[in-house]
Structure formats: structure tokens, C-alpha cells
Image (tube, rainbow, N blue to C red; front, side, top):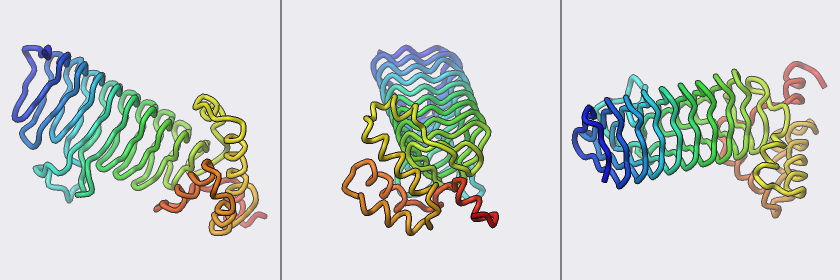
Length: 272
């Protein structure tokens, strides 16, 4: 049985699983679409949810979290329910986190499992977020951003619409990503790839062979002075290796192009 504080307001289609705890002054608005909250999830207080919203088990929501509201777009009809927001299990949402429901007909905004959204972080409409990510305070993800597993962002970082943040990527604080950040690479400045996330690789359990493959990909993309087309062709010569095939797939579905590194910046400035 759910434990719901007497000051909570519920409207429309709201379903709470066993062990859900709803703290004081929360609002669960299921009038635009159903709200489903999984077992053991806790809303500490002053949380506002709007459907369509499905949330799995054991999530923890701190005060003033707002999930499932309409996209921040002047062209979007805020009365349209759309495909809503789907959230997995064991996520933590700290104070003032906001995540908006989908704007397109391609499916819901989606958040996976075991992610940590620190205070003031935001994910826009149609974002697709994987598992085991950490978004530091005031991380801003624009609409349609794709975040793969184990990504970490520093405080006050941001990602442009349609950007991909590859598996295990690290985004330094107070930087912006207007292009795609490949798996296990570190964005050390705004639109600048500076290094490999070696610590993240080791913590993920990657072996020596996989780490050497990531280093080879990094050198191929950012140290050999190859054009993007030539670099991709070089990667395809080793497509049978799983780690390298991951990079090939990432590059092939890129809409924004890869974030540049040192050699690309030098060429752009007229250097060697």
C-alpha cells in the first residue's frame, strides 16, 4: 500500500505501486495522461508530476522536481499529451530537476536506470538517456539529445539539440557541446576533445585490449591529421573488433558531426 501525505493533490489517472511514499505538498496530475509510479519510489515533498508518465521502482525525488511537463517550445500546444515521459528504476533526482515530455510522435522522452541528476539539471523534450549517468548541478540537455550509458557531466555544462554523448564520455564543467562526443572521450573545453576518460574505462571493467583500442581510435580521429571520411575508412578496416565497431556506429549515426580536437583546431586556424 502507498503512503500518501494528506496535503498531496492527485487528479485524473494516477496509479501508485506498493511501498510508494508521497511526501507533503506534491501534485500528481494525471488529467492529460496516466501516471504510473513503481514500487518503493519516494517523493520527498513539493514534487510536481504530469502524465503521461511512467516511472519504475525505487526512484528518489527531492523537493521541487518537475517531471513530464510540456516542452519549452513556442510552437508546441501545451495541452497536447503526446508520448510523455518514461523513467526506469533507481534514479535520483535532486532539487529543481526538470525533464519534459516528448514533442514528436517518435516515442517518449526516456530515462534509463540508476542515473543521478544533481540540483538544477534539465533534460529537454525527446531526450534519450541511458543508464548509470551522473549529471552535475545545472547540466542542461537540449531537446533530442542522446546520452549513452555511464556519461558524466561537470557542473553548468550543456549539450546542443541532437547532440550525442557517447558511452563513458566525460564533459568538463562550464563547457558546451555543440557536436557529438565519442565514447570514452573527454571534452576538456567547449567543443574541444582533449583526452580519453581512462578512469571511466577502468571503472567500467574494460581490459587492457579494449583500452588500447580506444587509444588507437583517439589517435586515428584526433592525432593523425586525417579527414573525417579518411578516419572513418581507417576505422572500418578494423570493424570486426567490438570496441572499434562501436565507434563506427556512433559516427555513422551522427547528425552534428564529431567534436574537434587539437589537430582540427590547428588546421582551422591555418596551422599544420
